[in-house]
Image (tube, rainbow, N blue to C red; front, side, top):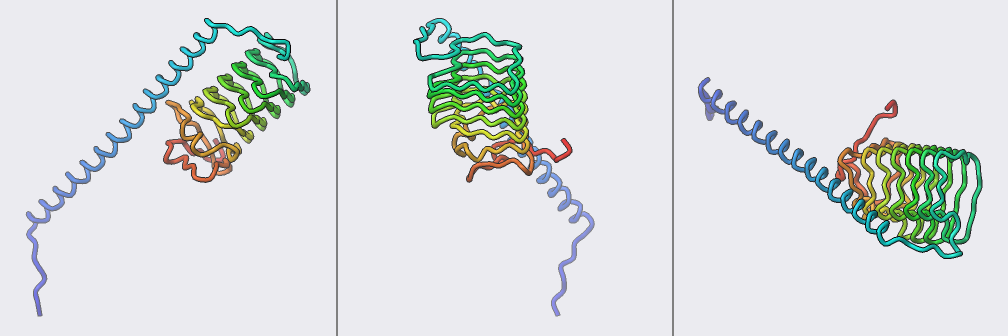
Length: 237
């Protein structure tokens, strides 16, 4: 009968010491990778926002002369109460319009192919609102700190490019469009339906504070929010 190997107390101590060193090294590497990823996200956010502002200043410098087919071109509607209003146009409507701090609760706005380009909805109440545009709609639009709870935003295959939803509330919202290079910094997407956005487009969205989602959030096939460092929250949050 073969004898089992015997270990001295010293040998066991050395073994435990080596395991502890390896465990500490592994945790250090994992923490370093996480910190590197966080800083890379912050750098990407800064770079993308700088590019957004640069492009915006360039567009303002060049200026664009509207034609007669455009409705509500550069309209200044800040703070206006448009609750439950319905405004529909077949033309390229609402380009560069400002709806900042407007009450658009349950409103319905629709326009043609390039509608809502560079429109501003910062701080607006868009609860239950429906906004519909065409193929290139909502490009460079801004929804910073807006309330889009239960809202329905629909654009075409080149819509929402370089738009911003920074710190926006999109609880139970339905979003359809391309969403390339969209700012989702701090956005609340709990219960939102994102299945109408291509997975590859969502992967180009950027942030420094991760957007949040919950178990009810619907993602397109192939999109992994964990891999993209989105933050899952509980139903109570």
